Amino acid sequence: MTFHALCEQLSTTPFSMLLQNITWIIPMTQSVHIVCIAIVIGSAAMIDLRILGVSGRSQSVSGMSNRLLPWIWVSLIILLATGAILAIAEPIRSLENPAFQAKMLMLGCAAFLTLYFQRALSTDHAFWELTPTRRVTAKMAAVVSLVLWIGIIFAGRWIAYMDIAFG
Amino acid sequence: MASILETAQWIESWPVAAAIRESGVLFPLIESVHVLAITFVLGTIGMIDLRLLGVSARNHAVTKLSNEIVPWTWGGFVVAAITGGLLFSSQAHKYVVNFPMQMKMIMMALAGVNMLIFEFVVSRSVEHWDSDTPTPTIAKVSGTLSLLFWIGVVVFGRWIGFTIGS
Image (cartoon, rainbow over all chains, first blue to last red; front, top):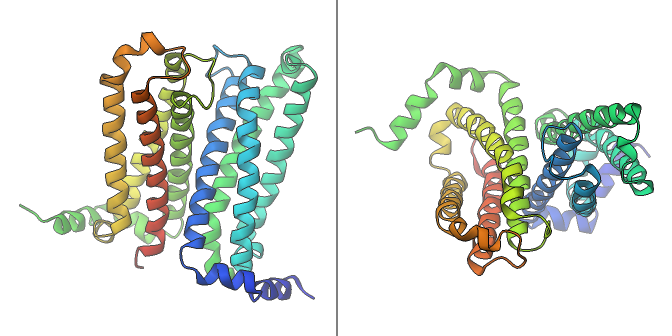
């Protein structure tokens, strides 16, 4: 079975049809999705800006991370759940859309980067500050992280615009 | 005295509005920056509101947290306002009569009033409760209203996309 056929079949399942037919489900799910994006963006940006030494200098990197990372992970779980609902509701519009696929790719990278950064911190809260190499690495990772999260938002918005070509 | 609709049509006739309308890619691009800016505003204001509610950052003084975060919130808001203005101009006559758009503006105005009241009234006594958890009830009310109004901005903002005609 082709991927397209799979998506078509998904869109005809009772659950998918239910999501499509109750008018407020998709907009409400998208709104929850956006609010959670705000939590992730606000938290990730604050940590990255702290690593880059641009903001929040009264707090330590590990102190700020310990406070904000739980919010990021819980929000990412909710984003996964709401995202799954949106993908099941409109499989062809999302799963076959290159913007969506690019978003998932960047999301995987961003999640991996965040996880790696966090695990190093859990072994030693000064891990990223101990050597000059690690300090530079942390700064580069912070920039990459910011670029990825911004890219994810752009790709997310662009799903709607590539929809016309692929939906 | 020009009607609101006439003013909207006049705004729509500006070259920048026409450029956004006619370009295939300018609107999505500006809109993406707008969404990014809004999420940044909500995310950062949320941090302060959650501190006022005693949910997060309890061992950080309110004023210290505020001083570190608020400049970024303002930066985000300015970007959101500029991109929002540009988006609005491209189809002003449609947006001006769009119900969710009107509600979004009302929510923002309410959020603004709430923030002014916080800044000039609630904050007066902040030295007394800066490092406290819980903060005084009025600070909690202010924080809750702020969250509700800004989430309202997001929900109504999303709704615009579903109701604006093409």
